[in-house]
Length: 361
Image 1 (cartoon, rainbow, N blue to C red):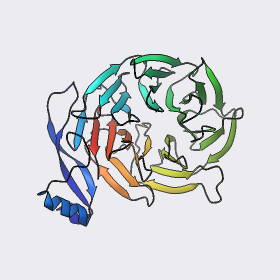
Image 2: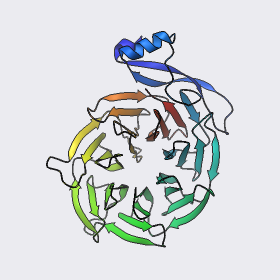
Image 3: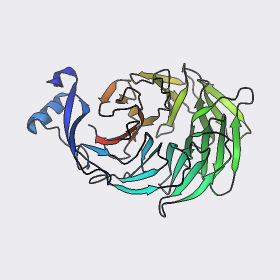
Image 4: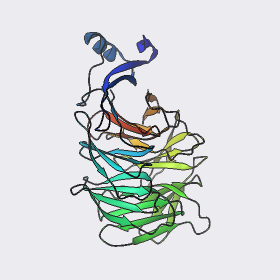
């Protein structure tokens, strides 16, 4: 009945489970754009939406975390998913079959606030409230390095896409530090000497010559890593704290999530003749919990997504700003969403301790 209303509510199959849950439930959790092709496919399949991924069911529920889940990301090969949160544990999940929990890694002395995969997936990087960053080897599944130097919570961590094995971290102590995984200690520290405010998120440029940071002061600073503590320029447009930054797959655009209830895509190429603010997206919500909600690009750069405090998962068209999906299912603030690198699948994690992996059209 909802097909004529631009979106169709899809009743999924059984919601899968990890090792920690043995029951299967049915839940309506997917919204798809309406089109004549979709209508035709639903009619031909006797009312059931055709499958678009290799998942066992259209939507899989992963449980096991004992507290809010703050971060989740697909591995570069799409076969593994990693998650972390308040319980200080790093969970690895198989992105096939029943999406079972394959490993639980310990080593963080505080909640895990952010995660990143190192390049081809050799390592998983963790930002922790224990004031450090951590590096886990995926072959041995052991912690191999701890990044010490910050004096407060480490909110964000990001690895360089190419070149030397650099990692940056952003902290409540107001600094962004750069690390070389081959040596001990930070190699560079970026900090505003005039006004020290907490940094909530960070990201590398595509060539790893710049670092982007966002935080309490509403501005996104672009740091020149070839110089000492130098800001090349700032991106002004948000009216509240910047909680998430993500560089597009082609390295041309930066996506930012803010507590002013907007996402902005910025043109961060070296030479730009027009304004750097490309498009503003709206619909998602931040609330009084002040959770650090993140942002994400699809692998082809055509779609974006973001965490939202209203318990929905939002997906936008990156070119025209339309909301393509508004997905229910979570019972708490959605902290992060990520796109699968090769299949039409997204993952979301939330304060309700749950992770959903589901296919989209």
